[in-house]
Length: 80
Image (cartoon, rainbow, N blue to C red; front, top):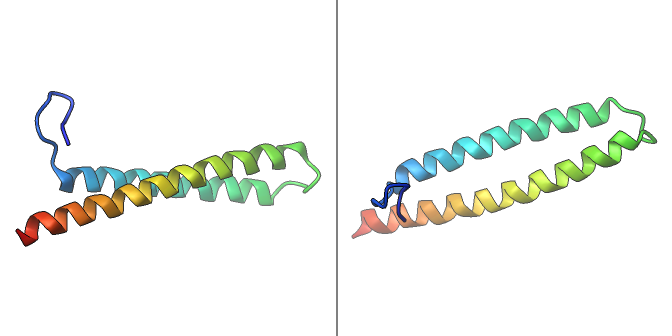
């Protein structure tokens, strides 16, 4: 992996940044779900929020995969 300036990025820092992003998305997901629960199920806003939640959940899944890959990379580097 390379950083913005072409130098090697630090997998530990990448893992921390990815973890921070997951936590932020999880907070947003909680906010959206809480808001959705307060609405009448027939409210069109429920559908809009549900779609936003689906998109966010997909992004979370990708970030969780990236976390696992970074963790594996770190573990492999430490084993060598």
